[in-house]
Length: 237
Image (cartoon, rainbow, N blue to C red; front, top):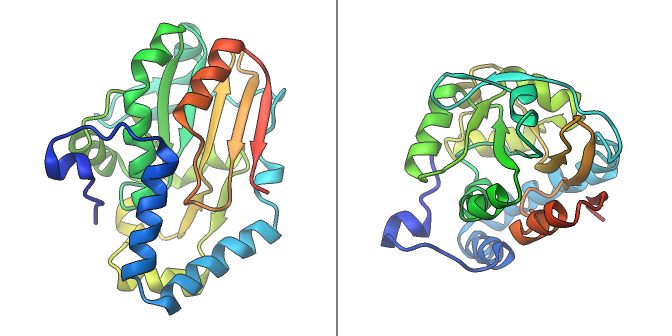
């Protein structure tokens, strides 16, 4: 239950823009996934857009809730400790089973030196267990912490969570995407993908969210926002 990246298969680093990497993965899905299955995923995304989840997330100017979660090694990591050192880039992802999450994490991994250069740090949060986070961190050679958000407790405070629709749940089960095993609970709840920049006082400087899990912000956009310090929000259309 894991997406094998191009980086793992040929031992090279994919430095293309993230949008090109994600577009390639969408093309592969369009080619190999049955149309009826694609229709179920498209319907699930459309329903989330109708509910306007992205429009109601924790927004720019709001104060982010403090949190402490276990990282991929089981060590506690607190937002207050990270913010004491500088601004924080925070990515909410679905899990290691999602090829679009993997693509985003590998692209953000390449941006770690530039993020550090402007005095900020990067973490990712998902509902998967510590063990699953460890596997993802190790297999994709990530250089930033993956935090395990059991029960989506933190994601819920950012207003990102939803329950996977029953038809999509059935598709995931057939594809061996076992969320109860991956996440350690029976909720079938996920966060919509989102990226935040928090200022040192915990206020939201940047927020990007999309009900469509195949779309993610470019790392360069995150770095530019860190460099300029301009507050902005990017939501799905």
